[in-house]
Image (tube, rainbow, N blue to C red):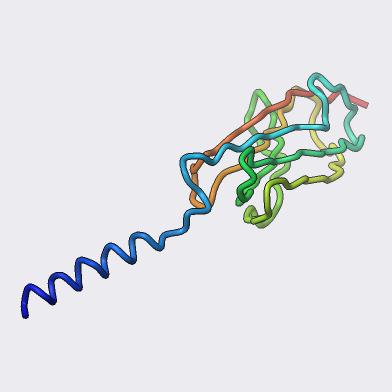
Length: 136
């Protein structure tokens, strides 16, 4: 009888492990396309910077989390970080769009776009574009 209980426990353990989410696996391959701004764009302080980034899962899986941020290349001071909720959970492709008014000091900036799976760091992919902000 004791062996039968152990056998049921073993099958139960195997069953629960088999039921884990298979949405994110080693075949997950994310791509990030920064459509705007273009590399080496030059803007003036106070101008608007259109931001458009497309996040894709190459194999038709789920885009779970995204982040778009802008920071000063020299000081690393962050001036933009969106969306407020990184979990977008959408099938295959997600496009993030915003218009950022550049109330920043003149200098060199980087737009960084990141996508990752269900858990932090899973299949994480990062793309960056540098641009310049000049005085008015």
